[in-house]
Length: 590
Image (cartoon, rainbow, N blue to C red; front, side, top):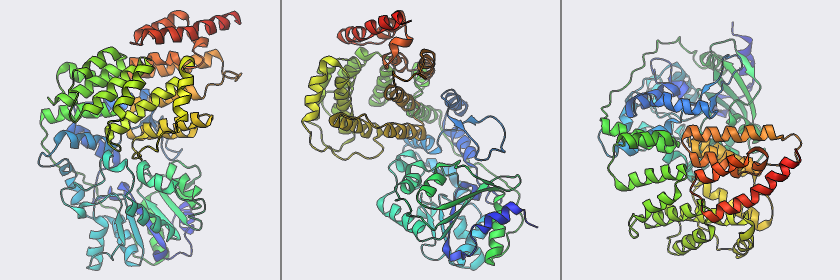
């Protein structure tokens, strides 16, 4: 007799035939034997053990733990403190692909077991469902559903019945076309792919989610979030959250995609249960063959030879993408970068100097770079950015504006230069002696800028901020929160802290009686400590420039923050002229 929780879950789809139901699967569907493919954490560990320095995954997890990036279980019955959230597999693979270049075999040879996986009983259910007129959408690269259909029905799956939205090894045995790296995913779905998935969702009356983590923030989440309210009205979703304990229904939206589906009008029910039990009950209700018993799992790791230089280079690239400045400095100091490319080493040293607040030194580094050639615009942007960080706003604006006129619109370097120029004007608007000029610059209504890809998140943010200044309204807190999530998903830890800084700046309310000096000090100290742990002195001591700093920092502490970084002398005077009278008034009020 089946558990009542399973019966109740399957009843959610009562009256729907297989042809009316879309099955949506993820990596968890291929974990059982004989497929025996790795779980997400297992595959992440495999990639780190193969391509990066020893202990790199544990080191990254430590940084995640300190910055509060925890991994929370979907079910409250899974007791225990949340573990640190592992880094995105796509971020790690991106660094590995860049480090190995055209080396043969490719990085994706590490997924050889995925390309050759045998189907398991969950795939057999999917094949029976497809044979009955159903459709299957999957995030998986393996071809197990197709193989199961061939074994059971002696023929290929019907045309367009199975869809791999991140690609599969059917697209090429080398895996080069898989959506497995951050560079491929961060831009979201191509228009044709997005249109097909929208049609799949709109054309279904029911959906069963199997073995899917719901962690496709860059494409699936954004596609569903863009659907109008009530677009999926009438769609019944049965989301199976796999577990080994007694089946029961989960009420809260533990996965953001569940909430997004509800917002689009879908009726979502999440059941925490053994996946095979739920699918077996569903097969019985549809008159499909019963699921066979489980097969022992026998995972294997395909061998792949990686040189020490490739491992050092991949580690060097990974730590830069994660914003681990302390670790990048260590590799530079030890000479373990795995590269002798002067442009790549200059960029790495440039970011280290930026986060150390050594902006004079940084300008000297880039002045030594060629003033002409493919990196001329990057050189100009970095020199202008250093002037901006020092508070030398007029020279920064003049220098960046001069080079912006020569930039080719739509290039990566032109977007970076536009962002920095926008930051300069935004900073001018916060500075009393330069605010009139900033207003004039904003009122000139510049030509519509080139449309930047969505992955240029910081540029979209500064455009939003400047638009708010033009209209005389506060900049969007929702935009800042979305950007914070974006950097969490890309695992850019410095980006996360930068947006925490912004949220503290924009969210400060001096009239809030609940915001005591002690609470404010705790918030600012927490941000300072996190930046120092990451290795960013600039991020740490810039905390003293947040509003309300006069309430929590002594004059001595404020002076230390000003002179620990290479600000311009006029900017230091300007900041002190703001701080000292406010600090004195605050002290007099006790």
